[in-house]
Amino acid sequence: MNERISQCITDNQGLFVQLRRDLHRIPETAFTETKTAAYVAARLQEWGYTTQEGVGQTGVVALLEGGAGHGPVLAVRADMDALAVTEQTGLPFTSEHPGRMHACGHDSHMAMALGAAYVLAQFRHALAGTVKFIFQPSEEQPTGAGAMIADGVLTNPVPDGIVGLHNWPGLPVGQLALRSGPVTGSVDRFEITIAGRGGHGAKPHETVDPVVMASHCVLALQAVVSRLNDPVKPLVLTIGAIHGGEAFNVIPHEVCLTGTIRAADPAVQKLVPDQMQQVLNGVTAAYGGTAALAYQWGIPSVVNDAAFTQRTEGYLRRWFPDDQVVELAEPSLVGEDYSLFLEAIPGTFFFLGTGAGDGFGLHHPKYSVPEEILSIGVKSFCAIVWEFFSQK
Figure 1 (tube, rainbow, N blue to C red):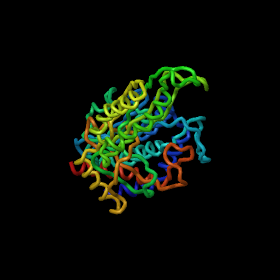
Figure 2 (cartoon, helix red, strand yellow):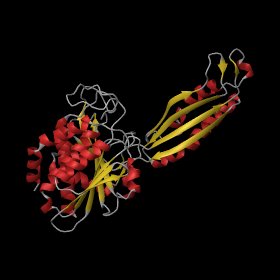
Figure 3 (cartoon, rainbow, N blue to C red):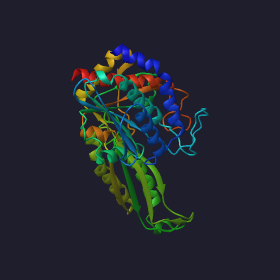
Figure 4 (cartoon, rainbow, N blue to C red):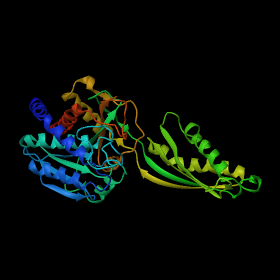
């Protein structure tokens, strides 16, 4: 069956490319993926699927029930949303939506999942289980996974496991990389209000300058990463915006800092707010001011189930050369709300290499996924589904 499915994939590479190009032309951002969802549903229906639309606002779900007896349920997830980026690739199938672009490669994720749906449907009679295809909106926000879960996507039927992938610049083209444990970072947001006493710019001694305090806080907060955190556990603290003051000759009363925290280890993530407040209190107290920290917990890190991931690696090695399937060396601190699925059911999330390309990475207006990886993604999904059912 391995050879027959592989040959079907080879014979339909043109279909996978067309799917990707069609979807690349119509990028839509979080919870506006109406054209995208309609396209996905239409193709699935064309291949004999019954689809459920509007799951989690704009998500699409489809079931493939195998004809070789009852068996487990495996979910395959692909994200659908694009970014508010103006495309600069110059591709003949460039974005038709001004200011919107599939700069993160979600067009390829959908094409791979749709391609797997097409191929597996050709072998429905031999499948001893049910495949649940989940096309998720709003990953970039990231709020789509939670919306779909709240809408019951993990029920009726309940999946026994879930798989997903992400195209990944930096890995050789076509390489499949996975690891047990943390794979991505948590995504938290914070806002810090530094309060002092404003006044005339020519009389700083009569003020408690929040601009100076904020400047020292920006630097001092890096001690949370470099001195309060275990250096072998990845952590990022980024200040993304500073707002304060309106006039060149006025010392303001307040300055606001906003930023993000990314951690791979949930235990590290939980310590950060207290550590930040400790640093902020010390710095501002030295100048006679105060600091108020408003911390917003976001999505957790993607933590791959160890047993499921080990089995998945074995499945892939049965279908790909050994040197094409590798262990991911370390997690990345990008965010991915696939983590919410893994909090509910066992599964794994892996990366598919896109090479260095022209040096443009994810979210860049010139980023484009090499189309030769599409059939590899399709094959990886098919391999995992087939082996999962066979091993069960």
